[in-house]
Amino acid sequence: MKKGPGSVLVLGGARSGKSRFAERLVDASGLGAVYVATARLGEDEEMTTRIDHHRARRGPDWTTLEEPLLLPELLVREAGGDRVILVDCLTLWITNLMLEALDVEARCDELAERVANLPGIIILVSNEVGMGIVPENRMARDFRDHAGRLHQKLGEVVDEVYLVAAGLPMKLKG
Image (tube, rainbow, N blue to C red):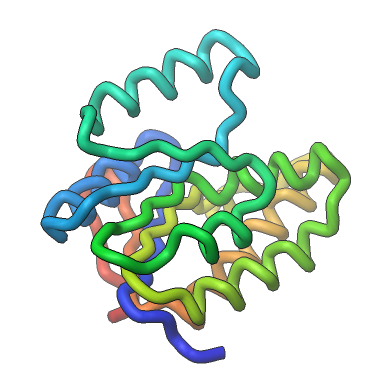
């Protein structure tokens, strides 16, 4: 796969500052901003509160698109032009695929292939979940494995990779 121009992967743990860092990258570009949300609105009250908080922080200049399953297709449709696309987050997307019993590996392969060839600037945010203990149940282990493999695939094709911890970005690639 060849690299796509302006592609960035931002990894970090929960509440690490990865989304805020990714949003700062978008703001620094001086271009229009498209936020692609993979969360499913209305799943529960706590998730709705998180989504509302993120929307308020981004402000009215951002266009928000919601896509819990068909992420590669959306990116092909929306990429390019004079705007940055920020996808937040890939681990929620993997969760959605698993809950729908879809072929997660095939969809992750498709996403990596599409990202490798997208025009414009795309920033992908995801939780790094493989640094802790081995989960006790199969579904959690499968989730961790899917996320880890997707991160490796994307790490190969994107221009830059950051790991965010304690609000501090560490550049791993680029």
